[in-house]
Length: 112
Image (cartoon, rainbow, N blue to C red; front, side, top):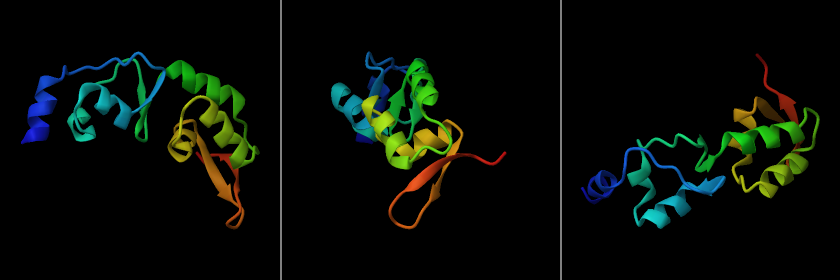
């Protein structure tokens, strides 16, 4: 009930100023739980895992990540932009990870 009350106090659409913001941080800004943000629209951002990312940031990241790149390099590109969910971001950009044992992986394009 508390979550529903908190969610009702929020507008239906939220537009954070940050280019990239974790849902936890956004919830803290509004003084609500992350659950209270469920069902809200974020017209200026795309939800990637538990992070909101502006499309321009995704485009910039996509321009730097290439098939065949080591996963660690791709993660560094994402980290530099504040995107911490590499798996969700790579999937959104059309990539998958080809794992090489437990030590790492290589970024590959998803199969159609």
